[in-house]
Image (cartoon, rainbow, N blue to C red; front, side):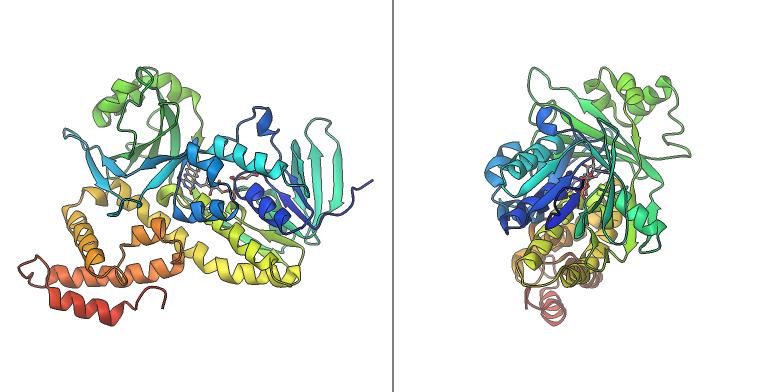
Length: 452
Ligand code: FAD
């Protein structure tokens, strides 16, 4: 017999699912959440994706709205900027912003997931079902589930249903199969592999308050700190070709790459080749799906709707913003069809904008950060932000530190700002290093006050 119908069903209790469930349960909805994994409170860790993530202002704003920051703050390690490791040079810290609060934070995915699940479990009207895999969903919101312990299959009417089952969403796949949604995954030709840099005498082996980057033009290594003194390093490499994962088929090839490109990291990784062999190679891509909703029955949200590449550190932040946007619509006296339609209209342009900026940021991290012209423009952008803080904010800062500026607006303003930077680079600088009258004129003419 099917259980009584919930006001809202959610598939996927990764990052977005439990946050959305908490927000909706607090609005008085009876929410039922289904997750394939077993309960993380019993020790199960989230599946294979990144061990830690960068949390920034948009994600923090959402967690604040859910009243979760007291539990999340102890998990956060501030990162002040990118620590650039060039070959044969001392590392240099390039700050992310220019104000003390302009930081991003490294958090453990497993610990964050646990905080969310614990809070979800405290909500009276929220039922958590772990060990339940979604095998598919119909356009009417009927869900097919498999109990992972007993193998029992169930079908239930779950509409309204929100799919937060991640980049490989089973719900999205079945909606594609029945023709209700069309979807395309743009797979990046670079994969990734994670490695753990152990603590040294209980302490971080590298500067703790930074996101470390070893940019090497066509590939890169990054490392984010963990609270236990370790770092999670991620190697991003082309799948095939010269320096590629394909070319690293032997331990000798792995050692040779690190010896040549990342000798400082190799010195910190005594078990490099064993880790490299043991850890999975992950794919990266952008999911383009349309529509995200089917009537009042099903909505895709978070990575299920719009997975992006991780180079701006915004996938989770964007998924959390999605939850806040839907919660604001749940607060209004609307039907689900209207809520889902408005959600999609509001969030689609934002998802498209961050997807594009995330791809662009890969080139910035692995290549442009080493380019003197890029570094000059960045210094100029920071200078202009100081002089015109209500009009000119570097694009990276808009995305990471200004949740009040939607992604699409950050993309649009960023393009105008780039043109201004180029015009200034071509003009004769005044005594302060900038053609000030030209800067003031272009900025006032082309960049309206933020928020107007
Ligand atoms: P997920 O967190 O993937 O959750 C999906 C959940 O659904 C999982 O718990 C899964 O077990 C469950 N599930 C899947 N299939 C089924 C099924 N059939 N039935 C039932 N349950 C199912 N974002 C950032 O903001 N900052 C970063 O620094 C960052 N770094 C990243 C680094 C890497 C290498 C990668 C791959 C991603 C990174 N991201 C980052 C992106 C971030 O991980 C995602 O955007 C975020 O996890 C999306 O949340 P979600 O809830 O939509 O999906």
